[in-house]
Image (cartoon, rainbow, N blue to C red; front, side, top):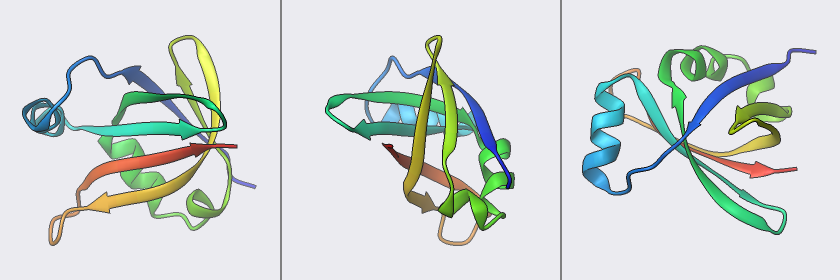
Length: 96
């Protein structure tokens, strides 16, 4: 079984401009929500997520995200891609 683990940073800025700056820096804005806890706005490394997204197990299995000193076990809920470039624009994760 393939395990996917990502390092994430908390996202401090909100809005379209902040997300564009992140994408320009090869990062993906993302959110972790669910399971009765508050939603976390995070950023992930684009190339690592794009590489993992090529594997079917990424969509079916549990993903571990290290953020703010804690591990979050999540599943991918939605992945927004650019219409014609090999780019991921946004990711939604749900806690399990």
